[in-house]
Length: 108
Image (cartoon, rainbow, N blue to C red):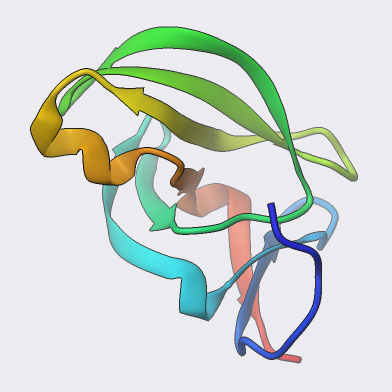
């Protein structure tokens, strides 16, 4: 979880409280699915709190994940991949999924 420093226009923020969550430079993919619809895969996230680890069966296989929450307002945003059980999915380890409906893009 990076600090809020440096230039990385634009910035993705929490839709509820405007807390900065990720830089555009950390966006890896917009092709993921979450329980509410589309999700974005980020290499790094900031200003998030990690929930407890649990094993989950997702569309692409079994993973150990932890839910992520906004550090300011506490809204659930998505999850962090902790461990992939399948070798082909290991590229996701340490990455963050944020539900598209929970973020918006701002310029600074």
